[in-house]
Image (cartoon, rainbow, N blue to C red; front, side, top):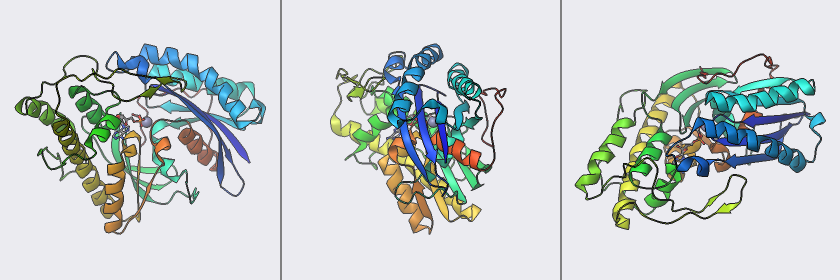
Length: 371
Ligand code: KG4
Ligand code: ZN
């Protein structure tokens, strides 16, 4: 039995989890907590590193206490301490990694530094119904707020980059377009909600670089920007988003109601058709390129992970396209797609089982590459 405690503090979510690996290579998640900082950064229209690291410092000890109590264990039974060591914001990464290293030294246990992208990439194997820990060769699409890339995964630690974005990440495009439309942050769920029932063919938006393995989303964002005045909409150019239409939870899970106000007089049908058309343009590109990469790499399996893979339409369309092309398809459960520490604990468990551990002198690396 191997019990791993992991911290994830690469950006604006503070997360801690405890995962227990069993000798038959199955695992059990004993506790997983995420404290969101969305509300703290929203009014600035983006993430403020100084605020993020202060909040990590505030929330991490509370979450540590919560997961230990939730798991019903003593800290001394933890066999290894893991943390995200990059990529991400230096001052944020430092908090989680320092805590994990301190605990590893204090309890004389191994420390494992994990690449955030490897956490996402392995998350479809975390297992739901089948609980299958075996990492089968696959073409993996990682789509988050900071990254969009397709990777050939031959096995644990054996990754080859197929293509990445040359400009905006898919999640970044969702966030920027949502902001233009006066919607809240993060933009992905806001756009997805309004796209439901909208006509995805109403607005003809560009699908960039279809012939390449690389991705590009900034042209799509610009196309939406220029389309808005033509359809009578004044884009929101302010620093922060002006609409928060969804009820959100506070940093420690408490309910916090947000005001409802629209940035511009909006006809619901126009907004939902625009959101659906934009969402479909992103999905078309992601699906086309992922299937083409899987065909080229001769794998049997396609996987998708990262915050954007919460998007139900993307999951449905990529799943259908994969099966039509003869591939098996795996996506992580929704709660595992956005940043969390369970995926970091899982990557650490697999690495520990493969005989790997990091040195406590290993530094965090804000630009840490996956391959
Ligand atoms: O993986 P993640 O939590 O953080 C990073 O590592 O970046 O991803 C966050 C990104 C945000 O850009 C957010 O807008 C996007 O994931 N996202 C979505 C959805 N939920 C989150 N994008 C599209 N549809 C969603 N339902
Ligand atoms: Zn992430």
